[in-house]
Length: 300
Image 1: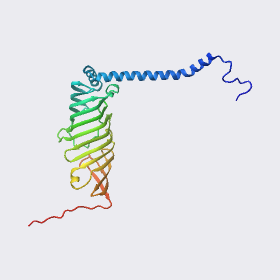
Image 2: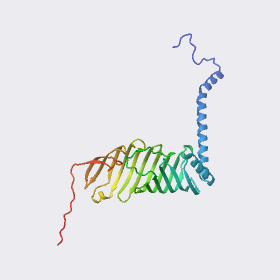
Image 3: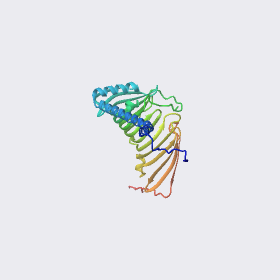
């Protein structure tokens, strides 16, 4: 509130130099922050430019790969080429735990920026032949102990194609899945996340549109969805199964939707996949359904 004794904010006889000096003091902190932000952006741009250039040279590729190996503790060999355009990396050996080892025979890879700046194995494009997951601890007959599983480094794939993944355990038959395609696949700590994945198990099941996550600690909590094409069900005219699964790997709760002979079918299931004899409960629901039957022919 102004009174007769309150001078106006902008006195007509104020020195212009003093007014300008006050304005500079008011805006200088903001100007300093802007300059600092621009400086940081310039430094980051230079670092990215240097990194991008280095990835395109053999000497830069050698430096980066040696740094990745030193930072991650992963052993591997590499051939000619560069990380920007692609390079063959062979004999990759990753020690996941004391008993668990991951071997990759050869992979054609293009590295991502996080491999340097975030200290993780970041592959923006990878074409992998075979991955072997070897469990050197023989089965004990005891219930699955759900050990915490985590790699020594974070693993990130922007896009990956894998011909075969084989799980081997002493005294047991190997489990093989093949034709794996994954996008935005990460393994950070014990958390494995899939943006989208496709795979096939023998000629029995084909999985597509797999997405979700599983935490490899505790009872392995999970939240997944996928479309499954089961060859035996296809022969019985059952459409692909839309599956959602939650809970844990120890006790998985899920829902399934499909169609049979142009009729909707849905169901619920509970499975304890790693327990002895794999206890399984399920129920199906439908409204109207037409069951196809073939009339037997009698030959004399």
